[in-house]
Length: 372
Image 1 (cartoon, rainbow, N blue to C red):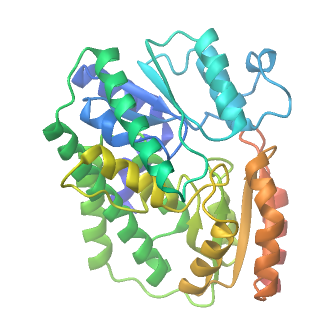
Image 2: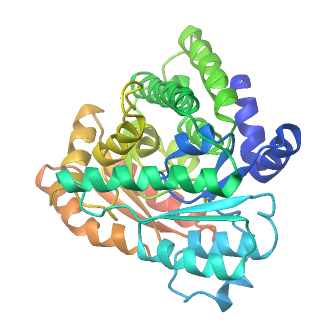
Image 3: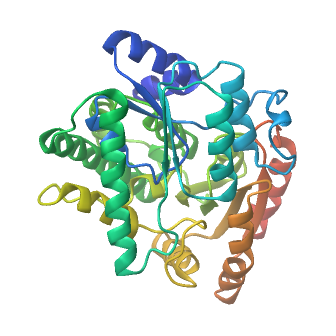
């Protein structure tokens, strides 16, 4: 599709895009590892939020600093940094999520050379009044850290403008999911995935414009329906490589929703643009659906998954986990059991960024689709 050309170009080499942006704007680039990163503050500081996903390169140097059972995201990101592939970064933000990311923060600080380093020690249990108050203090501290680290002042006007842009982006990404849900033939799952990967590294003002153009194009486009594809919901942490979407589509499947931090969790929930902006930012990150490293009721994630399966009329669910991802592995048994009680088929597939699993995944996907 011609309209996603800019997104494809950026995804093919996100680091080159960030370097070019930095050279053109003289702005700062701030790396981050998680959708809990309050990008609005980074954007308000005049910097570019850059989601670090790993290049998939072979691991050599990182193994000296990490246990073999560290997930491929952590090992790959550290490898990219040690090899100089992330030398355009001016700083890095580590939200308090899983143990691996928390430990990576310490290793990163001691063995890399970036001017700015921030740990966002967020609450773990989110469904309490004290959690929101604590989250507000985290947001305020991060704002001050950015101001001190880069010698700037983030005014409320600057922050409000950044929030407005972020809300526009999130609304557009949600609209793309709606188009995908109602008319899967208009936008392939793999194309939507490309748009999302680009969205996490693009200049947010450029992104807002590009998304509006894409939505207009898709709404006006007339394409014959492709019948009988099995409707699939994906759930997991992130899915950057190998690309599961092409495999699912070639197996007569269509991804109609996902619960990824590189997918729906990235855009769900808007931020109130009036009043106490720091409180409003905190409220958005507290109230959205949690990842397995956070808690908001015992069965919150399982109930959410069931709701999304019903809402999107899905035929089945595919769990996609990074190998050695403990938080998702702990959640998997009860979520699978909840699906089974409702008669919803599911499949689990573990991936690693540095290993291609296309052949095995293709075979399993084809068998799963035939079973539905």
